[in-house]
Length: 123
Image (cartoon, rainbow, N blue to C red; front, top):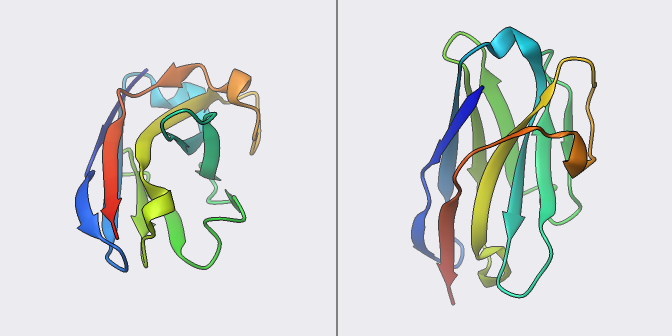
């Protein structure tokens, strides 16, 4: 399984961005896909996750501003980020967990990781 993240960039505070994660390979072997982020000198944190049946989980920081959704026909998971704040600045990674797990929030369960895309929000 390979993941390719894209869509990052520079945006002003209050702006929007949509990240995309294309999943390729034996996609039937995976279930949950999550978006993680890591800011400089901070730990990696889960932003949102979604299963193949569209169950979702959001971090408190993302609730009400971000939306995760997927197009199973395109094997793509999106993270729509609205009303961005400077504290959202980070490298965003998408990751996939094997089908044996449900909507897992444990990063150790995510076996497959994309390369990351940088989101910079200016104040």
